Length: 260
Image (tube, rainbow, N blue to C red):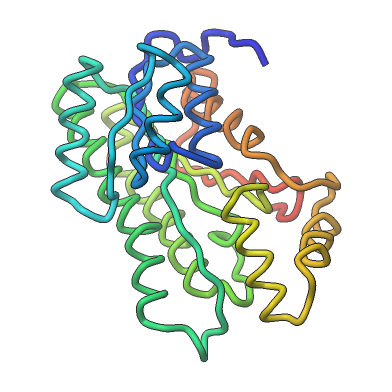
């Protein structure tokens, strides 16, 4: 899709930008005119993503669960871009297990990346928006599982429910400064994370991965697996002035799996 300059001149930072939904967001932001700091725990993935866009993007390694590292990467990105207008807090992980078999490590790791990581990223973004007087925009990646619980994903759902509640709360805190904070709740998205999940779910339920995927399609009124680009286009909308009066929303982007 060709660009329409919806983000022309904006300075953006994307977490988890090396693959999947994050990579699609990076590409869409650049297409729409933004300069993008691409962050990822995997520096090679970040470099590859940034390398697609020449001087318009630069890679930074970032562990979003580390507050000091997050602060340092924001400082470095701000110095490179000479400003910050937009942050997409997209980094996330998942595992699958029944609660009776769920380990503390699985619970803690999901909470650390999906919930704490969003908190730290959003905190650094807001600090910089306030310091510069920027009416900035934050787009958080939540999940369908942040709206409705799912078996085998209790810990993941808890972390994504946290993102939805955090998004609403922060939006109310910073609205008076013109800062907008929204979230996207994807459904069954075709990513490397999904490829792992359908194998895990198949094992836990005694099904083949293909049968699991077929269930996902059957549950989706639009009749297909969601693509990362479907989410990226919504991120562009939320980041742009087209969504200038939207804040505190967690938008269902599931092809109709959840309607409310």
